[in-house]
Each structure stands twice: as structure tokens, then as C-alpha cells.
Image (cartoon, rainbow, N blue to C red; front, side, top):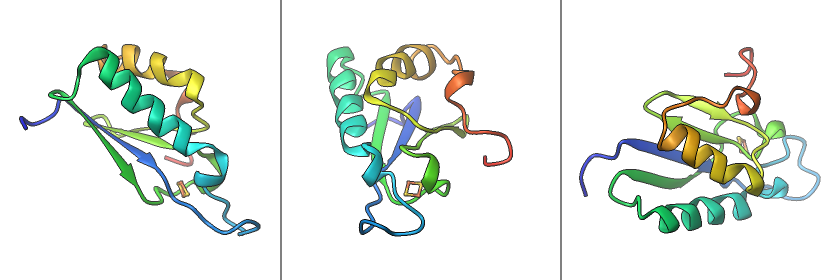
Length: 107
Ligand code: FES
């Protein structure tokens, strides 16, 4: 596989119900991850975009969290409905989506 143009890390951390940190797992990260894979398939981007399921990224209470490199942009509170926009605007277009960015004091 050639070096990807962009690499996404989708937090898939699970924690037990009631855990004080919460988790992206409790907030729907599985459907977000599946949607990224679906959108990649639709666009046939597997040669240029890497998608990795990751452990905890940090701001657990703000999940689902998605980290995109090389920019190092963290999107928080990502829903399945946001994924196509992230794919087209940021991953393929290079445009950061300000409304989904984690606050500056978090990331
Ligand atoms: S559980 Fe996802 S950032 Fe911590």
C-alpha cells in the first residue's frame, strides 16, 4: 500500500456502563466507523485514505472522536450524518470543518 494522503483514527474505546470517563463506544462510534468504511468504499479511496480503529484519544466525554492526519485535526461529537461531509470536504478536499473541531482548550 502506498503512503496514504490522509489517515483517520476513529476512537472505538469501550468502557463499562457508568464509568466516570464515558467512552466513544457508548456514544455511537461503531456506526461512525462503519460509515467511514462505507464512504471509502463508495469513493474507492482505499489507496489514498487509511482508516484505523483506535483506542482512547483523550476527550472521552466529547465523543465520538475522529482524528485526521497529517493535519492533526480532532473532530468531536461526530455522528453518522457528519461522515460524508468530513470525507468530501476534509479528507478529499483538505478543508477543515470548523463546527466539528474540538475546542482549542481540548486539542
Ligand atoms: S473513549 Fe474516545 S476519546 Fe476516550
